Length: 397
Ligand code: AMP
Image (cartoon, rainbow, N blue to C red; front, side, top):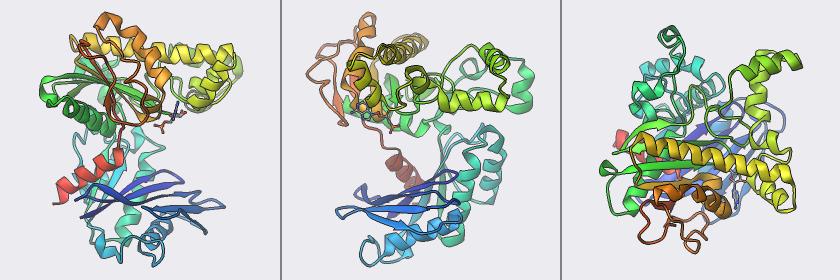
């Protein structure tokens, strides 16, 4: 069965058409600038050249129509008609406490997702628009919602409650949820598989280090803690997000700089992290190049990033009373060889020994620790689209 995986943002729509039998990507693409001038669809069929379609996309329904046109096009299409799409899997950012697993979408599910909009005001409404547009164009095709938060719903109360008046949890569900759940689930399962074991008897720490970053503790197959919180702002120092800070800083800076809370929130999400600290870029490659050229701020930015990762790993090893596997994934985790080496320097006390030769790898699934290392270190490429396609297939089969 072919499964269309959709990841919808407020002005963008990413898609992959995946043949679930062979788990290969038939085509993938991206609609950008939906609802604004200069809309463009970039469509990449497997084994063929990329095609760019510049045409107005006043809304997401038009974008979905264009995606279907591209997929069924006589020249650059990969299927003959809509009938060859067996199901659609939608990435949904926030499932609150309502969704601990993926679900087949119906009107009740749509209403429940809408009720989570408050928790992710930038993302969930966009995800819903994507779902509704697909339902309009493909009314007979079953659709599944796969939540970024679902895998973390197994966290115990002691891990997800903040030290705030309990009424905020009761009234507004203010608690830690965690994100990148599809990736943490996929990578922890793959890591166990690479060791020839199942997750059920292992303690795994997954370091998802991309432009957004989060770490999770997966104890015997269940997530017991993760670094992102109510929103993706908590935890690691990220591309443009601050990660953990003293919350009193917000009021302090608002007063000093005359910012509103919304403007402060924007600083924390868009202007902080390694971008704000280094003054170079949000891209780790640029920061590394600057650091290698002698830029001291770039060097200290990288050091602060690695240090924060190491501290979370330490915390999660303590939370699980040990760790068997530490797996690195996402853009930085999969590709940044020196970054992994710097982070692993902190793991001596765990008996985790990096093998410099084996660590010389980018975007490939591999054990990167020495034989006999007490903790197995791994590089595991994540594949959120494939994970969404698998979960979709499991529910519609
Ligand atoms: P993601 O959000 O998972 O796509 O990750 C994006 C981040 O991965 C960017 O900051 C990139 O700089 C980083 N990245 C990708 N390739 C490399 C590489 N070869 N070395 C260092 N960082 C990389």
